[in-house]
Length: 146
Image (cartoon, rainbow, N blue to C red; front, side, top):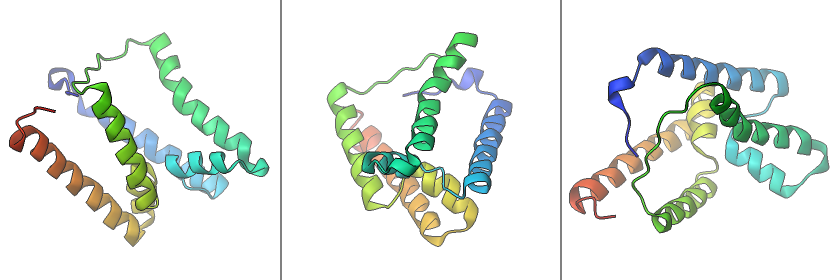
């Protein structure tokens, strides 16, 4: 995946960050819940009747918001250079890591860090470090062969 740096604007990145932060804060203040996607999906898979509706609505928003955006504005071109088997392996590893780390990047990196949770600071640091090492190994040591 590549970023089109020619058309990157700091304003859109800042606006996106403010919107995500505001949504997470509002969700926490109004419901007392953390907006971590793995926890929301995991809770839905446990299928507890008393909290199905909000979980389904939250996940539906993740699916339909980009579709609504695409109906109004043109989506940027997305290019993924990886093969489907590699994407499948990556998805399984992310799922395993999410369970192992008791949360995902949205739960730890956005919600936990903002609450000052030590385990979220550690988890986010590990996410970033492993990402850096992985990219370095794949692109520079293995020569981008994957």
